[in-house]
Length: 199
Ligand SMILES: N[C@@H](CCC(=O)N[C@@H](CS)C(=O)NCC(=O)O)C(=O)O
Image (cartoon, rainbow, N blue to C red):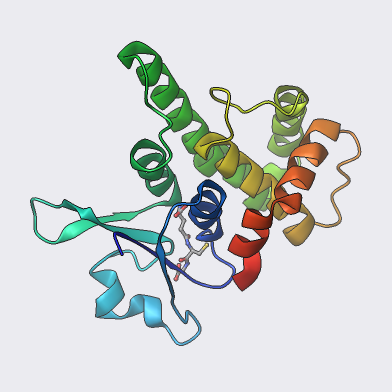
């Protein structure tokens, strides 16, 4: 299998896994037993020295340092998949460059800005409503964030938003119908349901 995704129950591996499932990309799935500390064992720290999930092995590419390409960070994994499997950056080079830059922007936003607003308690009061207000407007029409097809940017942003009812059911999403629709559309996707199956 060219692509092997390493994940664990209740980890962000569900994000690239959703992308793979949604796009119908063939991959192997290795679920590590985190409670048993499998992610800290040398077999996995050879793939991600930080011992965190997800990680991806792609043996279509040879790392000049040796072995197949090994990637950690869900955003980097999504960007790689968007490029080589999702066909998100095909077409005229200038348009492809713009789409690639925008996808990178949304992946970084999701992982560095949105995730922090959600999961760092001190940010949840001030930063979170500010981000929700803007996202709500951007998501309102149900259009993809980049280009005209659902892609890595939508996957990352929707996956974090869909954590809201799971981790913070007390947060009232009533003021943000666009955000609620984005969550509902993720939850309704069979590919998302399969990716979240291990939760
Ligand atoms: N920014 C990283 C976060 C990775 C991360 O923190 N993964 C958690 C699970 S969601 C993990 O593996 N934690 C295990 C540990 O820290 O021991 C990403 O998006 O991939």
